[in-house]
Length: 328
Image (cartoon, rainbow, N blue to C red; front, side):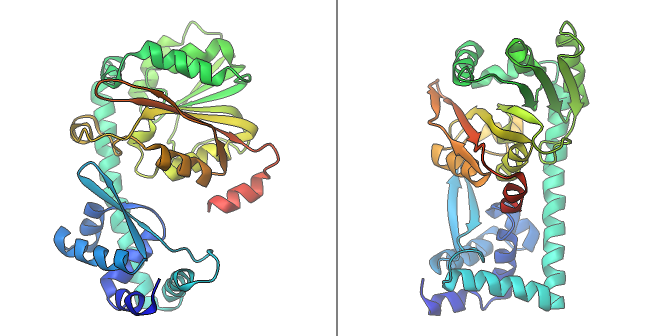
C-alpha cells in the first residue's frame, strides 16, 4: 500500500462514507448507490479508486458486485490499519461526519428491511408448496443421505434447525437428536411444520418463531446447529453464522447445506435469494470468522446446480465471552 493513492482516495467525502459503511458489512454496489443517492456508474468510479488504493476489495457474484473493506483498525500497524483507525476517530469526534454516517446506516437498514419484507411475503405465498420449490436445488434423497453421513461422527444432542420451513429436516433428524428446536421467521411455515411434526413426542421438539440474525436463545444452548438451504436468504451470512456460533456449545457442530456458487440470476427475483450460493473459499472464511474450525466440504454435483455440505466445529476450549468479543 502506498501513501499517495491512499490519501487521494480518502480526500473525497463520498469515499469516506463508503469506507464507514464497509467497516460494518460487505455491501452490493447497488446498495451503496441507493444509500448514497448517486448513480451506479458514479459509485463504481469511487469504488475503483478505493480498490486501487488498497482500501477496499471487489467480489463478483453473478451480475452483482459486492464490496468489502480491505483494512481493519485491529490489524497490525500499517497504513491500512491507520486509515481505518482515522475514520473511526473521525466518526467519533466530528459531529457532522458522524451524523452523515448514522443517516447512511439508517438508509441501508431501510433498504434491507424492504428486501426482507419481500422475502417474507414470498415465503408466505409459497409455504404450502415449499418442499416442491426446494427440489429446484436437486433431488432431496442424495443430499439428505450425505448430510446424515456428515453428522454421524458424534451424537446430535440438542439440535437447532434454523429456517426449518416445513419441518422436513427436523423430522429427518429427530430420531438421532436428543431434542429438536425448529426455528422459522414465517408463521405460515411454522404452521405447516407443526402439522408435520405432530406425531413426535411433545418433549422431543419445540417450534419457535424467530430471526436467524438474532436467535432467541442463550449462549451455549445447542450441540448441533443446522442451516438447510436457508443461508442464501441472508443479507449478512457472516453475522448469521456468528449468532449460530454464539448458541453452540463447546465441541458442538454447525452444518450448512446450501448451493455452490452459481450464476442463476433468476433465483434472486423469482425465489428471493440474497446470495447466489457460496464458494468454498467464501464459506470457509465465514465459518472461520465465526470462530469455528471448518472440515472439508462435501459436494453433490447436480445439473445445473451443485449442493455443498459444509461442517465446522466449535473448539471445546474456546471461552464463550472471548468468542463473543471477537465477533463484535
